[in-house]
Amino acid sequence: MAEFENLPLHIGIIMDGNGRWAKKRGLPRKMGHRAGAEAFKKIATYANKIGIRYMTMYVFSTENWKRPKDEVDAIIGLLRNYLVEVDNYRDQNFRIRFLGDLSAFDADIQQKMEEIRSESANNTGLTLNLAINYGGRDEIVHAARKLAEQVKAGVLQPEQITEASITENLYAGDEPDVDLIIRPSGEYRLSNFLIWQSAYAEYVFMDEILWPDFKPTHLDQALLAYQKRNRRFGGI
Ligand code: FPP
Image 1 (spheres, rainbow, N blue to C red):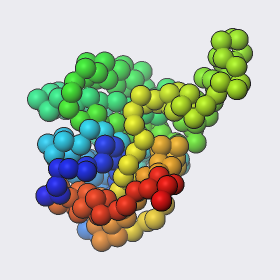
Image 2 (cartoon, rainbow, N blue to C red; image 1 turned 45 degrees about the vertical axis):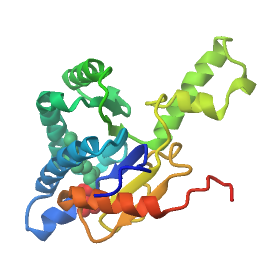
Image 3 (cartoon, rainbow, N blue to C red; image 1 turned 90 degrees about the horizontal axis):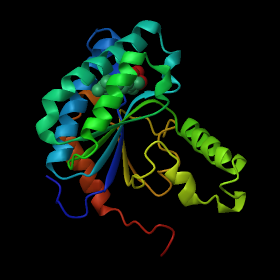
């Protein structure tokens, strides 16, 4: 297990490789997502146990709607299951949030997400962000619009727009920047994930592992790699 000192405050995970995991086994892609959802739950539990404060999981991007309908439906089905199951995780004290343009989802899903968010808002365990219908550029567009509304209303001057005010208007504007982004499965891209918040993030790409096979030991490996990095934030 990685040492508990010098843990990243905020981890982002791009849960990639579900489709390939299924293909390797001759299964439909949706079975890969199902296995991916199980890995998600185990990693959230483990991250909470070792004291990670914030974790953002890339569940569904603004671009993922382009996938075949049955695959999109399968991922949304897994989200629905999770929203019901989440009650089983009460003892873990997670603070659960949903980042993204949630207006795209059915009203009952939106209502359930809002219930979970508000009921868990004062919990003190891991803040677990599920990025759904999430795009980093889309998030910045939303923040820009909110600021523009304030300028239009005369309560904000353009020169008062700062990095801090843009951050505050992101989906989780009160959360710290992401320190570590993990992407398994051999792709070396950010894919529109947390693009504003990752300006100084460390990246750990884990080629040899597909997300459904991702275990707590892989999180440990990524944490050890992170702990060896020398973060200078532009200094020397
Ligand atoms: C990327 O793998 C994965 C996704 C687009 C979906 C991620 C979703 C889950 C892990 C399950 C949902 C979890 C919850 C809790 C609702 P890919 O399909 O692009 O894999 P590939 O690159 O091998 O095709």
